[in-house]
Amino acid sequence: MYSKKLDIRWADLDPNFHVLHSKYYDFGAYCRMAFLTEQGLTSALMQQYHFGPIIFREECFFKREISFGEEISISLAVKSHSADYSRWSMEHEITKGGIVAATINIDGAWIDTIKRKLTVPPPEVIHIFDSAPRSAAFTITDK
Image 1 (cartoon, rainbow, N blue to C red):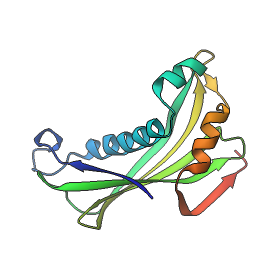
Image 2 (image 1 turned 45 degrees about the vertical axis):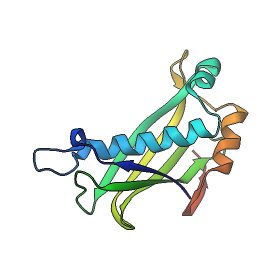
Image 3 (image 1 turned 90 degrees about the vertical axis):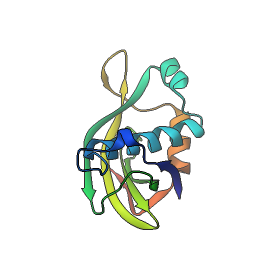
Image 4 (image 1 turned 135 degrees about the vertical axis):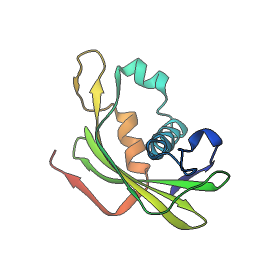
């Protein structure tokens, strides 16, 4: 399993003194990009090959409030990818004290940043996805 720890900051809170709903999505994006960068898929590499990730769908299921000063962990698992790795789905669990506070599901793809069309990633990305943690229900899809 891959996970990152974060401390909740004052700036993460909403007027009800718990984490603002949109921050959960930021936490998920941080975890995904931290994983990809640590595996060698840096923004420089994406610029060199003229591709990057795009998100089609992102949803969060909120289960527990998270408050100022709490430490959370955000995990990442690949739920599925297409046979050519052009499309993919991931899930995140946000936990506090070992209890699931939220789950995030995303569907995404790779885009050619010059042609502005979906693309198959270079071999470096395929290697990273093959080494990524997988969910218990992992599948390879047709599209």
